Length: 183
Image (tube, rainbow, N blue to C red):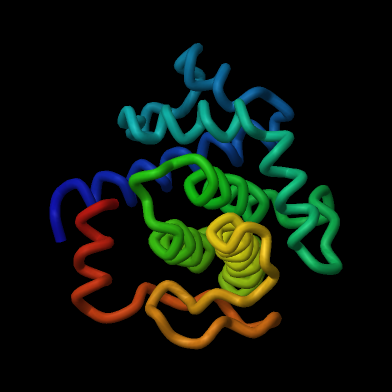
């Protein structure tokens, strides 16, 4: 993998730590960054700063999207770390053009496996983000078809995903390598 791939993965972990800290202390995570009030052992590359700033800037929209797609879970009842992971990934999915949706989901699932608040955090994160991805696909298909409600094939050109199915992983090895380079 390229150095950029590792750098972005590390930046996501740093951004997660700051978003989590902000949520726990009921502080603005962007203020924590601006004031340098984070532990010295957190490496804070530019991409991490931009993620934190973006999540904070779009918090209301992100929370609304998460609340509408997290079946049977109120946002304030989610484990704090899972909520931070979901906000981070949803931000990348909705607002960062150079990160493919599947990469944002896969990275979030890996963060949930490493830091998740529950044993099944990775499944929960995958399910919520998968529903967001399907809503993005549906919106894109509707725009493309001029508002028609027909299902669109998934990103790999296969059959449309059924509700309740987990989000698809990044397709073939060649596609995965190509997407990894974009990270």
